[in-house]
Figure 1: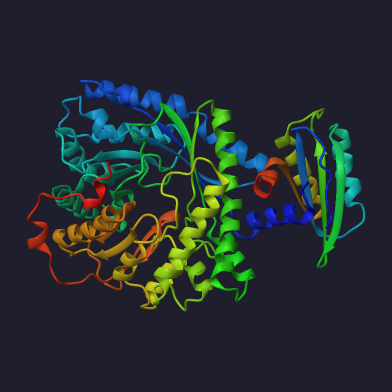
Figure 2: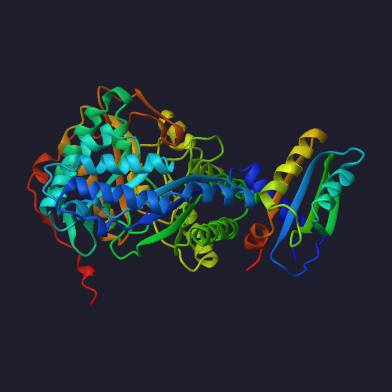
Length: 99
Length: 452
């Protein structure tokens, strides 16, 4: 099973990218994160059926923007690339799957 | 450590299976708003609600975006207005309903609950005035919800209150006849009402509650149904285990969002109400879960057993996920709000009598059921009394939200729109209980209420 790293801190977000595979998806997403000083902790990707699925865990401790602004930027980039890009606080996943 | 599979499971639950937080409900005490002058009292009520609940909608929307989890409703519950209004000399309490409606509109919530009276053992003057004000209050406001508690396991069943409330239901139906008697969809008659229920239309802020509190209600019939589909032909023990695990995950979301909202708003977190609350949307149906479990239609023999298993598994999973489970906590079986229930009624599989049996093993009761407009008041009272008896004698909450649709007969439909949905008018047993309910008085509390 593919496990994502668990590194301390409470400002982490999970970015998921789902859509048809194409050139430059990772580059497009990571460029935005670099611009906004969001530190990537882990990237994991897979192909499910014919869809490209990438899950990226990032730390927003030193980010220039807040979660909601980042979410909007990435969602807009997703529309350009015809992908679905979601940005969510990590807690929703921890709370649901961990006691 | 999170796995990619877990992350994708969560995302699938939200995007494909309609997982959402059904409601964040802010409970607000209005006990400090009483005044001999009802205009002054209404001013205080409006000011307090708009002050405390002003940031509620925005906080809900921010949390929803941060977690990527829809929060469908932001709502308010208040102290039963009978308690607040009683100090004033107003002849009717419509003005209080109007103040609540204005305050709810000002802060942007779609429903405000608490136009309520607790009369399980008897009426005060204020209680009676409130109940008599309900038809005008519900027909002349948009957002106000009313409830009356007519029975408890400790006090018994107040038949006088049931009769008065039944007449109020009929009058409300007539006053809102032009909108398919929608007023009755905002009025719940309870036995053993919980004081921290976040779900409308029966929410109010109980007298043992703090000044202000955040309660959440989770939902997720679609998620449970998908899980039941995935286990295939597993035996009943495994089925229960699967539902429990899913209820755990759903409840954790309610706890997370409730705590986040409470922190953002600077008020205490109250409870998570672990309920499966259906909506008219396809795939968001409790009836469809029962059908996925193996019933040809909801309402078929076996429905009560299947619902009992479902309801119990939801509670067990939920209790593990949150230390503060409260409210109604169980599966809801409203007819008009559940596409599978509506289809079952249309197919002749589901009757009021079967629904009544099912309410013995799940939360709430006869909910959002349309009956012919010419149903006698005494028959409505008898239906409420039956439901109250199930609650009182089994130490559980039961409720009746029934719509005697003015001018409609069996086979017609009522259309409320939105979350309230639409309903076929159902047949009611034509034999009378008038002589029984007209005896009045109070059915004594059951022997097992003597617990001390």
